[in-house]
Image 1 (cartoon, one colour):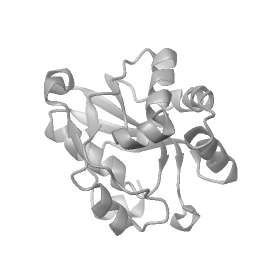
Image 2 (cartoon, one colour):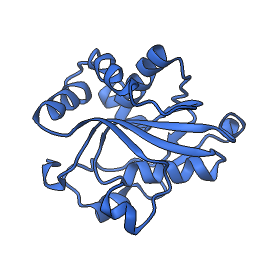
Image 3 (spheres, one colour):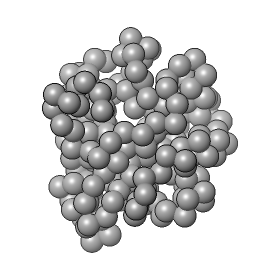
Length: 180
């Protein structure tokens, strides 16, 4: 647990990252997200699979707003979740959690600005609450920076009935100054 988590206990059941964010991890994440290198999702998922929490019931990717999906053509977290399902056999549901409000690109924002930008941006699809109730959820993302996005997602998932939420990502930013 990091120092900030010791001061204020997080809602989630932990963050697991395959690699620390650095030059190589950054290149992989950016080529997947913005360079259309969707095959990188398979590579990333194989590295993340070894960190899958025991007893995981459901993988849920961090959702993108529909406008961002239309412009990018895909959700990188959903591609990673699908690849993780193939490796681990843990089912994924890319539609259960929704981003109901478009948010600005968070890169370069401080922790407080990120939290404000994503507050209230996520909700669980009402028809999916029964599928979520009592489940050990693994929230899938490519890069974990300040935790603002995963915290907002975790809040929505727990309020909708998830038993627990563990964050599983490709890379974790350890130095906030590296988020450029």
